[in-house]
Image 1 (cartoon, rainbow, N blue to C red):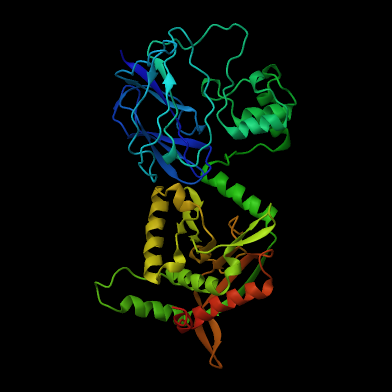
Image 2 (image 1 turned 90 degrees about the horizontal axis):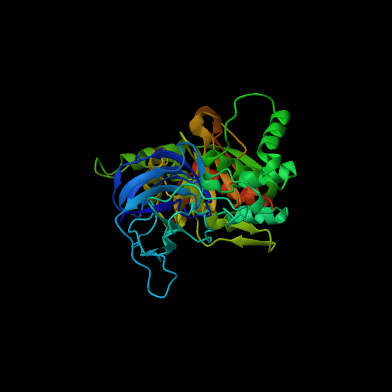
Length: 462
């Protein structure tokens, strides 16, 4: 007899707790194969295709495109052929033991994850409240949480006045409720199948009510309407929300300072032209200005390692990091993202350039993996592509510094004692004043400017 497996939004790793449905890849009634992508979701870090670990017929989908779901919320149900009977000595219910999925999520390994077992609910019971999911390090280390239900199970249960398990999957929601002495059993969730979301708890806190009868959501909506003027409302979620949170945290926690200098980039541009003109047609891809600046940054960080660090606020310690994972700002249709070139300190200019090209293309197509957007230790921001000369960059928390680069344009410049037209660029360094003083920051910026003005200076460190 066919059984219905409920596939829930799996743990997406990197500390992500929610995702927005961007596009459904299957319809109700479609036949899906094991590990076939069924939905495309957007997290705060990347666009991800979620594969279903079961093969069968799609019987239901949960959530429309544009809706945000927490990890552990139902995505869809799939009717499969059968499930294994429960071993002897149990209470008589059957258990499903699906095989491990090969492909888990785009960008994650395919090791055999441990299998979770779920009981088949007896006939006549309602769909269960979503069971709490223990936090894990990444999707590669755990199988998706599933519940096995008979295809003929009714959608509702008789109410006897006693609430069952609390429908909460997020540890953050439970912690928030504990901090404000809220009884989650007295709240009605607005998520799928009554799932209690963070917004439900926050609404109850704002309204000062612990029972659903006082309509905390309506009260919160009224308060927002009174506090803010009428106008178009754009949700701060996905990439935009993640960027907003990170920038706000950077401003709150980091005592930053900015220094800048104008540099004559004429020789750097000439050196780049010579590199790209050498070796003939089969010499490989062109070297970009960003790749040259990235290589200069790694050389400067080797001289001034204080800027390749982070601050452990709780331990009150500066942690100097052994390797340079260089982030670079990339503007996409989804907003600003910062892909990371891993181990940039061990790469040549050509290798850095090739990785920047690969990551930039992935950013534009929305296929960056979450792991490619985290772990940076220093960020390079080329805002000159927007036609501006200067800026005061906001540090990409929890890093300690960011180098900003303006446009390279012809300007009057005194060269060898005479006025000439040269290619000039403004370089700006924003740094965490806790990790170093102005002398170190100025020394770093001056070395970068010297390499821009005289690329031969860089050769001394290669």
